[in-house]
Length: 173
Ligand code: GDP
Image 1 (tube, rainbow, N blue to C red):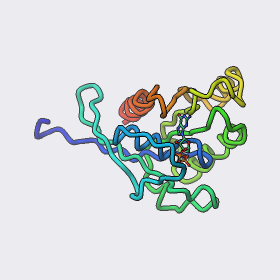
Image 2: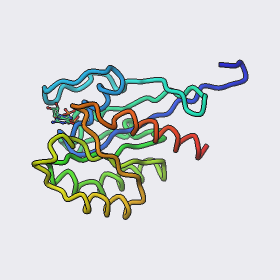
Image 3: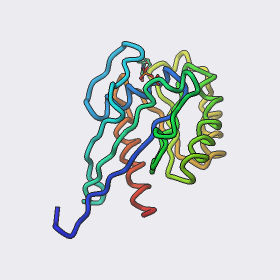
């Protein structure tokens, strides 16, 4: 890094219903691990990972809800200063898909308009899908966000989500 270059640090919030794979996504991206254990929350507010976007270093800080969403009790501190957002639902959980609009609204109420991406996780369980491909695409169009289909378990499309979000963030600086 040149002296005149500032490192960009981005606070990213990962929202969605419980058990869609948010903590797993953060662990996969920042630590390269996956566990079957449910609610193995990270135990810290966030994990981080450096990446390069257009040759510039970017520090992504990925904030985990740490289960607060179960009690609809996400604190203001969680959202404060968030600069980008991952909206997550699970392929096998219809309620989590139906909750996406509400999650987007909550984030916008707290953070204003920030770059967002929609993630359909657990795509490895597509045989048991509770959502049609066309429905997911229609929701992405309606919300004006890009849709990624990921499997944190199989490590499919996880890093792509965060690279895209970092690019979007930098493009809007
Ligand atoms: P959170 O409540 O949204 O943070 O969800 P977790 O990260 O705790 O994940 C809930 C459960 O789903 C755990 O048992 C994970 O191992 C599992 N899980 C997460 N991602 C995937 C995935 O892509 N595929 C499958 N099959 N299971 C997953």
